[in-house]
Length: 445
Image (cartoon, rainbow, N blue to C red; front, side, top):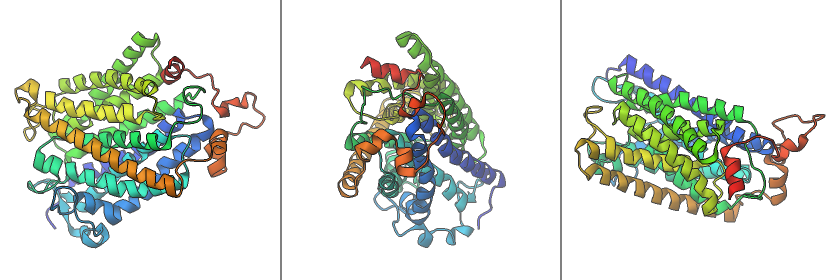
């Protein structure tokens, strides 16, 4: 075994734990955003992804993503348990010379990315999805869509690895294509296949617990520090750059989102500040290791405004992306990838490139656009096919009566809240007097 760097190994393992925490954080974030009658189902879909994707990743996903590449499209497909996995990997390392870490630490770190990305998609189809169909979808999607795109952007093999990162030379530090644009395009496909929720744009569909939303956003923000800074795979100055850039962009977007709300609707909301923070963290994900702190601030401010506008557009366009995966993750990922083409600076990372505003010309921006378009097209098309097949075979959407009654009781025989003897039980139907940007947009359109 190559000499292991203990500090780098410790940092990657801590980062893996931080990213793993993001999935329970996402569960609370999403659980608070839906109506009370389906809160447990929303949380359950995230926790189920933790189990399902862990198994798919260690059996086949990891080698599809990081196995030896021949075409730049995917790696080996025989399964990590045979080719590299949990026996052979015990004495293997990965990383740059002097910064070697155990392969199992890297497998675990990348596993947490696959889990949270899969869980993100549940937000597009909240309130109307069969739980069994979701499990089948999570298995297939994590292998057929997520793993190949991870190979495209993350598999570096001396110029013969993934076609986006290793051959084209587009830059993506922590997952703007793999996690964000991928999840946004896939979420749009899912929302279109399943159709709108009953009562969309007619009935109140307000968040039932804004404290849950804020707690979930806080856990996501905390975990995102490991998500981005851990992607340096070493406890170095580059990790520190990614760390502070992540914080700056999240803060900038949180403030620009609520400023947008204040100017547009007259109020700054708690839902807005939580959504804005997430939008900024999304946008800085690909760029955190390639831009200066001022560049991170610019990307964060832009993401807050652009994503807030994009979220409102779903009501004009008529598609029901329930919890705004397209507007926040898809659009935010595009902002971050384009931000690299404009604001990347070799002073932040000599291994990167200079963007347009730092004298690098249009070359890098063009590569970023190609990566965006290819990722979005493949993710949308592949997810559409998977969703249609599931929808036409086992059925992807619950019966209308179950949707009206709420998925907690009809699918799980449980309820998030014991409302017996409590007045105003109509809260379970969603008629809660919570305000928020989303509810005002529904009324406006």
